[in-house]
Length: 140
Image 1 (cartoon, rainbow, N blue to C red):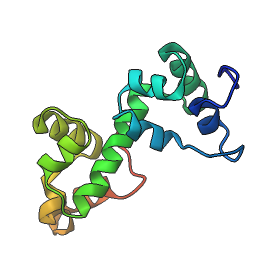
Image 2 (image 1 turned 90 degrees about the vertical axis):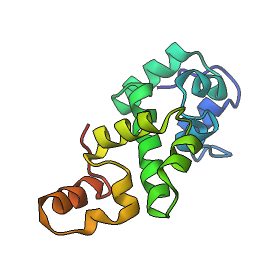
Image 3 (image 1 turned 180 degrees about the vertical axis):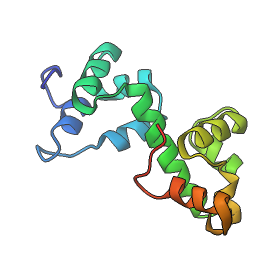
């Protein structure tokens, strides 16, 4: 589905990786601070065009895709030892509590469990956390 306007916009380069200077949707999302309107601007298309493209290409909304991507990046940063507050602000959350709620909704455990290593513990909570945080595991 090629719905981009003529020229080498970020949208066409991300959509057709391998056809010149490759941009990934992930890098465009980070540049747009995980905001749908900003992603459309960076990609050089309208928000509605971007919404249609994501529905056709990824079978999800732009907002859902950005939220999942942002939380996956958060998980990676937490494992490296960054604090919950640092990660929340780095990824554009205005309140760490909102980040914590989104993270728990996605992975089934609060982000602080990564910092304290609780997901490696014994018992039902440890086992559930290990499963929830395994790459590729989704609760959405």
